[in-house]
Length: 231
Image 1 (spheres, one colour):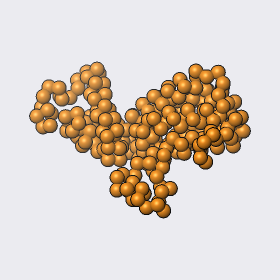
Image 2 (image 1 turned 30 degrees about the horizontal axis):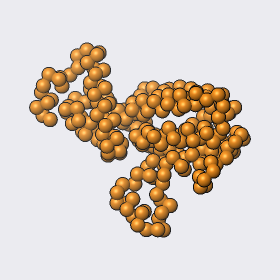
Image 3 (image 1 turned 90 degrees about the vertical axis):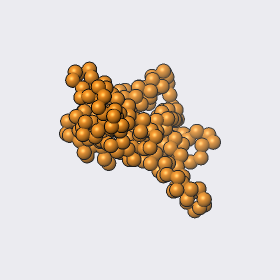
Image 4 (image 1 turned 60 degrees about the vertical axis):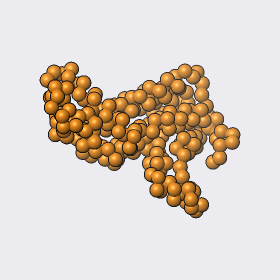
């Protein structure tokens, strides 16, 4: 690692293009480590080592570890929103159950985004500049509005209802993902003690049930639990 830091490839970026390339390399490293280890267990030193930089050099590009992962959370919002809107936009009609299933499936298919959704309010927003938080929040607001357009079109929800639905889905996805990934020692405990079986969580089915119940509560039509899906 030390020899890599002295090579021309790891000199301080001098141009805007070089700086952007270096930032992307850092984000790529953080993304890979986040997938492998979980966000909580990735340090700034880990990210720096993965790109062959010293931690002090990395801080020329990002103010903190949390800013790196907050950027990835914003990226996750854009990608999830695009996938969800693509799935909903292809429908002329949809029941509330079908919408709940689509939201749950697209979130559960993005485990690192679920992890980031839990970490953002607890940690990531709390050790960055105000401008970083502002930029992140504006991204989420834009994506929620875009998603809301599809939800209003398909289900006739009001704007506050769409905001509540997306907030419920994303916050619960983050919490459920943490519960579903307790680590090997705790998972073994939950699986071997019948009294603790309730602690073993499957993200998608539970998220689907909660969102279906939410939509039933706001009065959308056909918001019934799919046949054969236990409540």
